[in-house]
Length: 251
Image (cartoon, rainbow, N blue to C red):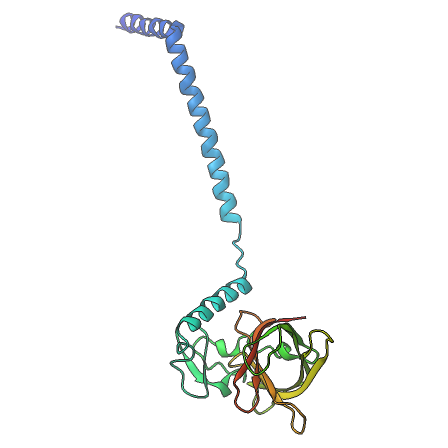
């Protein structure tokens, strides 16, 4: 009956009131409420962080990635000297992608994609500014043969550069190699050189200017991940035997 239901509801209200009046029950309810509020706050913070992470664009430093890849490749070549260009035929060069691929050196930077992913026409690779007129690269040369010089500063300076119209994979260059012959008098020896820069091999190769004195040449490999740093060797022009080495930085 309706009266029975009414008495039942009154009994429930009375029991609930008694429970609330119980100090232990009140403490439990308070702790539960506090924990729920704390959990809600954590979830809200987590949600905000997720939204912030999703909105943030992850920036990748492509130059740093190239330099790291170059360091790994150079270490592989040091451990296994036959590794470099091992699968390429003579007058071929690697495309440079993750999958080994070789094409003729003459096909680099000619305006046509010959590598599967177009690495042969990469803007950085084909940038003639690498050896623009006035470019200078210097470093501390250490001699291992040919001369008994102490370590000293060596500089390679480009004095002329022209990209061939018919062979765009090369830049014809002229330059000057200079270094100290005497550490005490600071006497400077200079050699007038001429040669090429190969886009395919990222390499500057110069020998004595025709009709000029000098038996030294220089070879710089831009194998450090960018166009501003290179491994350079002073070599005997006739035999190409290495005499000195210096890590060159553009300045």
